[in-house]
Length: 550
Image: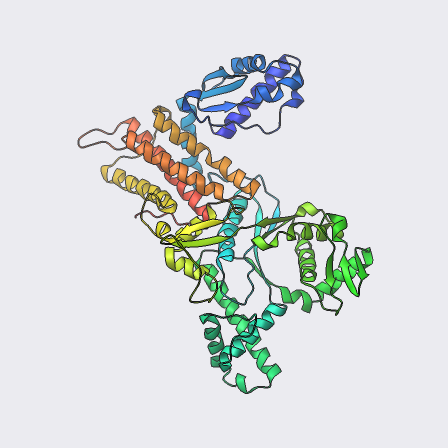
């Protein structure tokens, strides 16, 4: 019996009690949850349903709880149900009911933890979207890890997720990138507000390898050669880096295409026709404050050039035209204004603002020997994805970036995350998986199998702890998807690893010496197989490998 199964049983029991007493059954929520008490002595699970609805039906909470407990205690799989405090209901499961969780995991294998709650939902998940003017910096690296994990979590709930990268290849930043390449190729100083670092010199050299005649071209033609080839090379580097990081995209969307196709002009024209774009001081403004933004936004500047938001307007319009029900944007800490801005754009087109979600990620800092690491040899001024992976590896980098809520700034201690120590969270979790795999190999060598295992025999407190922790996995994944918080999966895996290690220290899984294998050994081996599967499933959602040996 999983927590979801138990919650449904408590709900059904509560409905039965209310109906028998002629009370209003509509007060019982459609979805009801049960929680694991902090103190195991209070039971395996607890519910506050009696306290939640007592006032609505005009009954004292404890009196209502007594009626629910009387019915619940007679249900299959329930070993005991008791009242605590003002009306909490504490529940203990029978060993057979708990053991059914192990059987479910072994039956569902890689599907355990998945659901169909978001089936039929088409989600556009846009993340990273770094300008093609340099390697991906730490902020973009955080989104590369978190965005990929969020896509996996949403897909695990049945959503059709399109992972999209928006290349900002239109505007002044590309001009500065081009000027920087030309300066490097000619030996001139880096232009003011230009880009520096080894990568600029490298790309400039690569451009000249392709076009040895570039420096002899007229200025405009020379700039176009460096622009076209330079952006192409930078684009290729970014794609390759992301792929090596384990982050794949379904769509690479070019901002410039919105201008070349006329999508920007069409979107602006539509807003003018609707009256949601007005002219003032020689510019065209979006009435975004009318739709909840903190101020109106300039879309077409007084010089006739499009402001940055013009591309955003056309881009959102394009996403919705492609049939996405929800458009999630994952943006950096300096983009808070985009929350109201993009929702206002949706509303200005007569669309539902809730079809737009904006997630804001905070800063990432690297620490070595207690001091901040501030500069990259490659990029000159910022730490890049390549720098982080070189320092601690892909798995540790992904895990370190995912395991904290994105609304928190994080410090990554390079020494810690590169260590083979239980203090290193990713090592701790991966070691649990490797240890479980080693156990399975040892069992095979001894001829001990879990075939026909009866998990209902598992009644040791540590066995119960591990089973209940395994049972939490589907709810953790569902919550991570609902709240857009994949860090919950990482923290859960650390809890699961710790619970497994404590179980292993207390419960002998394999027979010693000439000892005969018993049904308990088989049941414990089945439990370990379930734990191994859940660790692997969880690491898979994070895009982190589950090694069989360490």
